[in-house]
Image (cartoon, rainbow, N blue to C red; front, side, top):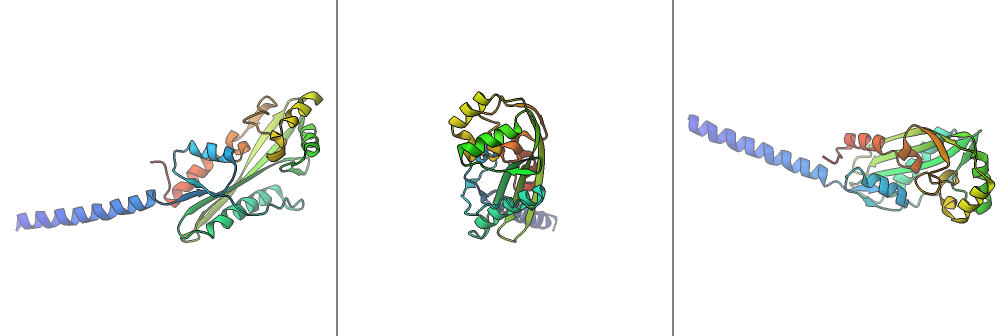
Amino acid sequence: KVATLWIRDSVVSASYHCVLSRQVDNVRMRKVILASASRWRKEVFEKSRIPFVVETSDYVEDMDPHMSPKRLARMLAEGKAQSVAIRHKSAVVIGADVFAEYDGKKLGKPITPQKAKQMLTLLSGKTHLVYTGYCIIDAKNGKKKSGVVVTKVTFRKLAREEIDAYVATKEPLAVAGAYAIQKGAASFCTKVVGDYYAIVGFPLSRIVEELRDFGISAD
């Protein structure tokens, strides 16, 4: 009887571990999608060591001037994540968006050299805020978590020639606030209070922490 009981306990234990192992494997195999065409976000997210794929969002951004910065940042991130999540049945999708704000003016991507120069001139020698919205959606059950990270950035006084030379590289045209702190505008900033990666467009620490609630981690 003792031998039989031991064997049964072993079988039950083995079965439990097999089920648990499958559940863990299923969590690890969950497809994680970064809903962004930004190579900067991709490079930042890669630092987490969490496997993911990139899928471009077709969400059309609307920089509503009447909406509060935090509400707008969250809405844009949710829009990007949702536009990709609806294409999948079980993926975990991450969307993010970023823009600068100074004196009540929201500064997205300038697109044109003229607007880029105007933005950089406005920010020169001043402190502005960067709003980075993020949203995580589980396409399998509709679970959603979103938030906004606010970072304070101070620029030194920029010479007109510096602004012209930087805009000539065309780098500022496609980035929020007309500057890429991780590239050509690295020397413009004298002080950053908050999350550096949020300025780049992807608040890595916050998102990795939130992903744990979806069963996603690098462990």
